Figure (tube, rainbow, N blue to C red):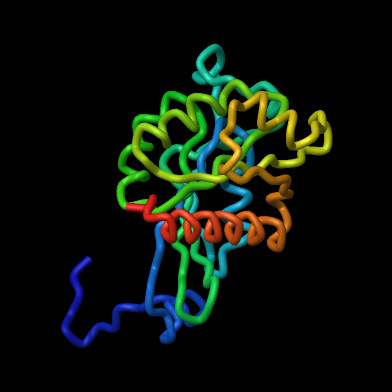
Length: 206
């Protein structure tokens, strides 16, 4: 299609425009295994219409993708999710949700590039997946907090037991959340920002 100089190219919707008061933007990644709620979290907390790259799951994934605990899930992220939230009038977070299926994890390195911090979403029915996720963040030097998504049919454990099971250092925050709720997802992001601030004060944030 050819455009003439007189043609008007539509810009972003009014509600999607960056607030004029914004002075700083921070990239945050939302990571975790398949079906832990990354797309839901980005969608629930984003103040703009989120960008998603979900595709319908097919028979080709049988025997390759581990969907234990997510048998009813019919779509999966194949590239990334993207959203935005203003923490203050001056500070904006850009949220990047990673694909959860292991065959798409090669995309993570690009999404980690330039990220100041991360949220690791955890499903207590599949804690073992979290070790690889946290290991990749540690290799890249990306600080993170752990958020336990409270699925209705997932077993509940005290935070101290989960910290031990995940071999999580005492200084790394871990908290419960319900990613379907905007307030709960925002609390997770605020916990991450406080953690990053504490690291900056210690000179541990590069």
